[in-house]
Length: 381
Image (cartoon, rainbow, N blue to C red):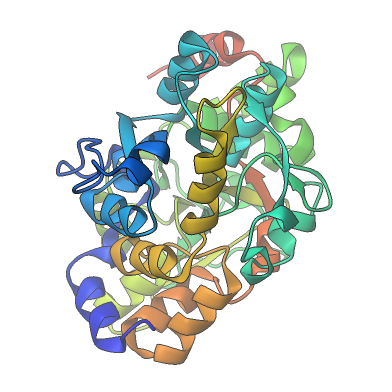
């Protein structure tokens, strides 16, 4: 059972300010060591080679896995692209599990690097919110319950604005960023060029399932539309982003988490900002472990996926990182505990997982080099 006191302590110690970008950089303490004392014959038989962000192969996670007989041999990586390159170069037999943001899952599958599996074959599957294994619009759900990835945590980006300075017209739309009532230079953005181009495409009405396939004239239109925002601000971190909105340096922008508005409002002592998923949808992510095709320790890999969805691991993930959980039972435990932990879930909209159906899951464009060239030539620095 999650303790309210533990959640409150972790939130005060920095969960609230954790972003996806800082999460994927991982924790310096995690070096991919094997399980504590993993020298028994049973542990050797249950070796599992895991490629993932260091945040997911911490000593604490390794120790939890060891209690169930899994000797985790972690291989750290910093980005989705890094992990994909490693699996592609290593081939069958190099890894058993690879973590990914779900927008990358089709890329792995098309390259014949991972196996699909039926989520109902994994004990404890019924604890996951149905939307995360039944919605075939999600890039990792091939058909109802047949998935490329075990859904783990999720979050959404959003449109945000300072309500003292500006009020967009409903229904809320990404076109707000181009509103003539917003002075030039008062738009602030997070993350990177691919995300900016994707948002520009959404504002132009490109369907979510066609965004990363934009090419040719459609891609150039999105790039030119984005260039119309210049000079827009880009924030390297949450503190800069929040300062700009709070002081009026920025009026509106794109935030990498809906929870940022609630955090700003608590700091200001009033409803200073508002963040929403616009009518066109928004960027977002679901992450989780995938089964590498030709895994040398397939039985152990499937056991790893099962344990990853267990109460102990899920509670550790939330108290350590604070992102919404795809696990319904774990979410309900947090909500029942109350306090800061429950409030943070509400701030992120985690009690309404069907909102994930409005997301464009961050992944690689079909033609990354064309996107990079379009941004460099049209938008520039």
